[in-house]
Length: 258
Image (tube, rainbow, N blue to C red; front, side, top):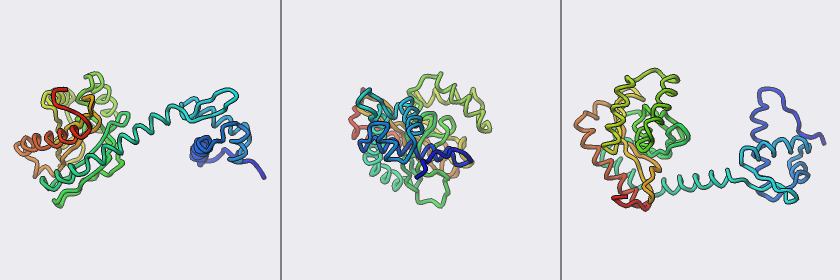
């Protein structure tokens, strides 16, 4: 049988990705040596070695002479993050449902994922409003309330880097000086706003969720149409949102004063 070494055409990248995942799964099953990997995946040894070496370089696999390949530290890190996110969703869900029910507005839960806000959960409100966010979406940090809340503990230099990068990728929504001033105000207040910066006619109030070490591990936001989010209502919602994140944070081991 011919070995699967074809690597041309537009699907080459996806084929390589799938083969890399196959290699990880094979190592997890115990195919630790190059001959075993090549045989179990129907690859030539050179292809199996190339894929495995790339995975070792990225930390998804590790290699020990005579013992062969084993799962790498990167997978431990990702597994930890996946577990942490899963725990966060489970802990937060009843609080999100209660908040959506009491405010009639859409509630989101998200985490910092590299340089974006990753949406983990969404509770639709009762109002007839379409908010384009979806679970699994990644949104800019600097224009979303959720993203700003996730950055409250970061130094101003991190804000500046994200602002510069995102202003290149998206149309400018707000003057940079005004944005910086608002961010400092959000830090002082412990919560953040989206004032129609990410989506036209949509405003939100957001605040960070903390763990036992007082580290920000996520954030929640309440979003609605601007007609339902006057300045006064956003001020009132701020305490409601912050009360909710404090309750979630306590479930994660956080205590006031940390």
